[in-house]
Image (cartoon, rainbow, N blue to C red; front, side, top):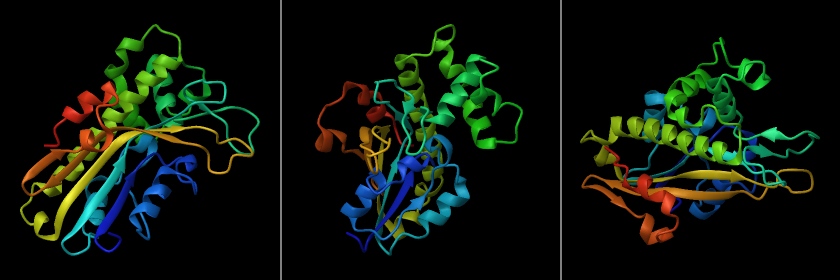
Length: 246
């Protein structure tokens, strides 16, 4: 209910994920919450860290619940190109997710391209973290040209990064006995935001969301609610549903 639920979002800080028609906006309307605690930085990783997560958790209503939606995003242009998106006021095509694709290009060693050059040798710690953590996860793509398939593969690996960091930060608090005296349940919804239709004449875009995980955490353990809510579709969600919280 609006009075007993604290809502957190760990999606990429790109403005196309924060429109009136966005996923977060839809959840706010359905939950009836006044605000959302923004946990996510580049790529949707919860770069607020342990301290930021602690601040968020300590805002939960007495004997209340926490709901967190998390994951990376990827654009699909009007021409069907994965990793590209139209933006209002721009005549040229844009990347989405720029952080993920920039890291991909840096790892693939495509020096000379502005996206890769912009991140290498800087103090941009969020992007440098993504590059470092993606590293060998993209070995299967080396030697291949960028394609819809390669960016789809990249996006799934970005989801893994977001989940691993989210799990670590949440786990730092939910493993403490005192946590469950203040909070009765934590619900984690993980997936991929697919950006569509953000060009001129389409206010707010027409985004989609591919859920990959839906878990409920209580003092008694965790429950997989994915099948109950989404059924068995899609098969690609299976390994993410099986991922253990602790």
